[in-house]
Image (cartoon, one colour):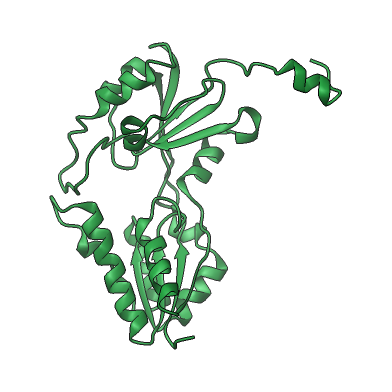
Length: 258
């Protein structure tokens, strides 16, 4: 095993309060730390834990393809690993959820013979379940990235909960400093109309990222979505529209009654 190593950690959505003890220890002991967090308080905390910490935010450039930005993240992280450093990369939320570069960095590191692993963190989905009072075991839960749902043949079970991530920039491939036109939103609504009535109640949700702040929870009818303010952090939660259809044969085979 080579001398360099890589540990990927998650800071949670609120770095102060959701950063785990294990992640704090790895940030402190690392020779080099890279980070991408969504709030200045979290950034300050990481810098206090390890003065070597370097932000990856600089790689986001207006109009630049996000996939190129992610490649730049990986290249910079792997440069440190190859230099023999015990390297730690901290990403907000869960480092394995909507963090393409974390998976690619670990893949590259392991393929080159370096020790690499990922630690879990609190994701936006975890916050959504808590803030909206949802138990995914009650009716089941389907989750799709909004653009992925639009451009692929995805199917929805209206008897389950549905979570659509990143509804604020459907079909957008580049980073936009000034906001997204979200021209793909009508196509998203077109697909959802196959499963839900226009007046079906839904929620736009954004987790709180600062200690003491409240999450954004906006209830409205599905047909009103075009008029609801959306940001890159917006998530669409769709409650079940119908009850599950019992499989009477399976009930009988299990010795259960309906």
